[in-house]
Image 1 (spheres, rainbow, N blue to C red):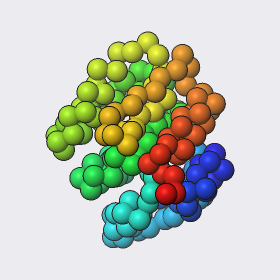
Image 2 (image 1 turned 120 degrees about the vertical axis):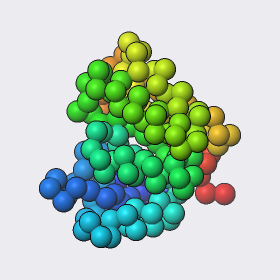
Image 3 (image 1 turned 90 degrees about the horizontal axis):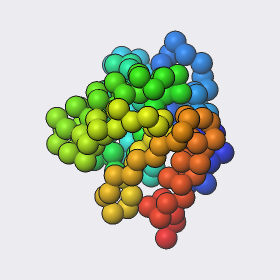
Image 4 (image 1 turned 90 degrees about the vertical axis):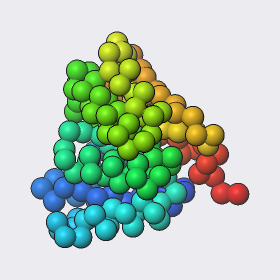
Length: 163
């Protein structure tokens, strides 16, 4: 999905867990690095990226990447999508954890996400628009089509179009 939708703005790449398959859930080819080099690889990829898609789950590595994104100011060019394997209750806890980490890093708009943890709708994802406003997308049900539509909206936003 990411390959099809994101290739028009540049190469699509990702870091992955070496214990998982070479093609991730949303279609990006994964790069693998050892414990000594992965942090530098993440920072380089974030610095060089025009757009970032971060799939949130409860893995420690994901939280390290989220903290890098926020510290580097890269959250402003990131689409955050919860893992498709998280049910609604787990997504609520995921949002609370994300909000706590973002608030601690000094991004109050992201800290507001904890208010969505009790929503009856499914969170599809969230990102900032070119004006710095947080946009949150929900659906009656989390599905691949809702993620696809959000990905298209995000990647086709004015922030990523060639001038």
